[in-house]
Image 1 (tube, rainbow, N blue to C red):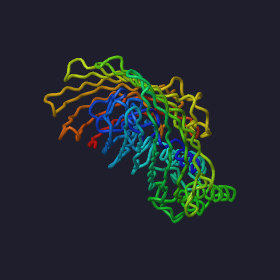
Image 2 (image 1 turned 30 degrees about the vertical axis):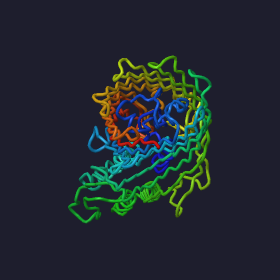
Image 3 (image 1 turned 45 degrees about the vertical axis):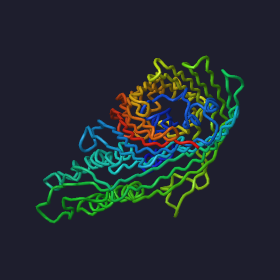
Length: 499
C-alpha cells in the first residue's frame, strides 16, 4: 500500500500545475496574452518571450513589461471503484498561483536589440489534495474486502461451536487521515540578441536557463477499519463493535475462545503484516535541477500591415536531484536520486495583420515536441519510468486567434480563442498526471496612459474536455473508471513602459 501511494507522487508533478501551454510548458506569459491569447507575431515589450526576433521594430531606447497573473485551477477526478465509500466518489483538487510574474526588458539601438526575460516557464503553483485522490484511497478501501474474505471461513468454523455466527468478517468501512500537497516552479531566465538584417527580416539568437524546484509534503495516518462482530451471549471474546487499526483487530479476534492454535498463529502473523502496510508514514521531499535551451527566431515584415514571427526553442534537459528531509521518504524516495523532467522543444509561428488602422487580427500556432522529451512518466501497472513514445501518440499543439480594436487612440479592447490539442494515450492518464484537450476564451482592455506607458488588464477561462479511463485493480480484480476534468481561470495585470 505504501508503494502504491507514494510512488505515484514522485513523478511528473509539474503536469499538475502547468497553465496555458503544452503538457509542461507555460505560454501564458503576459497580461497582454491573457486578453488576446495570441502574441506570436507581436511587436511590444513582451515580445521578448513571444517574438524576440521582432524587437528591432521597437523604438530606440529601453522597453519594459511588468506582469502578474492570479490563477485558479480545479482538478476533478471521479472514481467508480466499488469499495470506495461512497462510490462513485469525486475528488476535488485545487491548484492556485496567487502571483505568476513576468518581467521583460529590452535595450534597442539602431539595428540591434538586447533583451532579458524572467518568467515561470513551467509549473508556477501549488496543488492541495485535502481529501486525497483515488490512488491514495483505493489501497486502503481494499482492506474491507480483504479482511472480510479472510475472516469468513473462521466465522463459518466457529458458528457450530458458538451456536451463533460471531461475524468477525463484518467489516463495514474504513477511514484514514490522508493529505498531500505539492508545488512546482520552473523559472526561466532568458537572454538574447536581435539583429535587423534588412527592412524586411530580423533574426534572434538567445537562450534560457531553467531552474526547477518541486516539493512534496504529505502523510497517511490513522488507518482504521470499522468492524461490527456479534456481541456474544457468553464471555467468549471481547471484540466490541467500533474502529480498529487493522492489525489490532486481528489480534483481538485471535484472543477469542475456541480458536485453533493454527488460526491464532495466522491471525497474529497477518496482523504484523497489516501493521507494516498501514502504519503512519510521512513524506517531505524536494527535487531541484538546472537546464539550458538555445532559442532561435526570425521576424518577417513584408509590408506595414503584415508581420510574421517564428521561434524555435530547443529541448531543455532537466535531471532533478532528490533531497529527503528528516528521513521522511515513506521508503519510496531516495536521497540524491535523479528524476527526469525535461521541457520539450517548441516551435511557434504567428501572423499579425492590420485589417483596418485600428483593427488588428492575429493567428498563432504552437507545436510541442513531447515525444522527444523525457518527462519521467510512469505506467500505472508497474510505476516504472517509461519513455514518452510509450504514452504519447502525437505531439501537443495549439491554434489561436486574437482580435484587437482601438476604440480611441488610447483605449483598446481585445478578445481571443485558443484550441489546445493533446496527443497522449490512455496509458499516460492518471489521477495525478493527466493531459486534456482544452478550449480557452480571453478578453480584456489596454489603456495608454501616455505614448510611453500602457496598462493591460485581461481574463481568460479554459475548459478541458472530460475523459474517461477504465482499469482493473490488481489486488481485487475489480474494474473501475476514472473521469478526469479541469478548468482554469486566469486574471492578468500588466504595465508596459519605455524611456
